[in-house]
Length: 429
Image 1: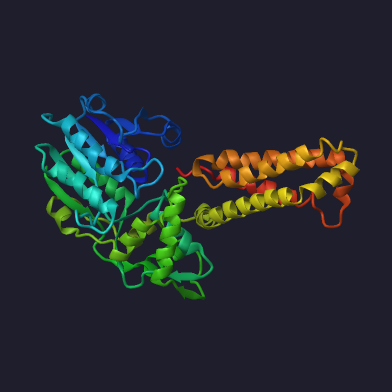
Image 2: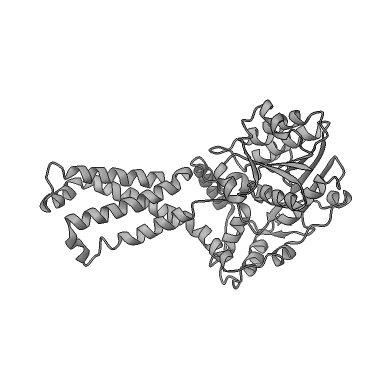
């Protein structure tokens, strides 16, 4: 049987791709970023398309001959390359039109809590896409998972791990119910639907039977990471979460997909819950509890490294940006003094302003560039190259500064290592 998986390098899409291949399907994987696709599954049969802009003819060619299409594509919020209405609604309508009249089964990965009058655009656009499928004559199954927990960490699951690794417990959204589901359970549910073992027209949540609040979820992850209980717990007021969401939305315009954007905050405030009843009625196996899910995912040092790095990574970017911006602005402000230093070391007074002003402008450019998600790695490597260039030129012109008791040259080296660390962690999939 042939399966087409849309959004196949995402957290859920990649798991579905692997599970379908393991079950014997001939899988065509679809994603819009060729580099991310190769990293996630280098041996998969990839088709690189931006589904939000794919026209009707492209959709028809993409799904031709497929026995099942799994739609795991999606985005959390409008930002950069992400248009929720285009991804969740318009693209789904074109997919439905391309499958019209066929016997292909469509398995839609939606989200628990989806309604057309929901408070966030994520849920509303998902609901419109689901409605387009349900109003069609296709053979469809719609699965709506709650908070998905797997070995890979992305978005909300990465946020929970990071919160668990903090030295203090941040008590945010106490009392708001949260239900989880194992990523493997979601992927296995997709295989069951793809094999026709779930009736057509099934609309079901995928979730554990019980619930807990977010502080309890974080505490379970903290124990899973092998960390002792936090000695200090700090309450996080609602207004602070709102402010964080606004700041995360602004960073989203720079390409950053923070799990704390306002859509995610609103979803968490409303609770992440589902009803396991319809899935059981459709013949699906029960989903594992959070404790059983974590027990099946042994934790080790790499999990702790990831959780701590997830917290430190944005801080490192902010420090690098601030350092280079201030360095460049101070250089421009005191360019005459810097020029005089070079002139006393044998540099022509006519040429001395060139490296001073040029270097200051380069510093400012790099300090701004690293704030854009797509420019992160080139900017970090540019900081490394320019720092080494400064050290090389400075050594030739002013070698005595290496012996300066304040160590201005030596202090460049930690910044080089920090930029290398940021560049090494630049990939988000």
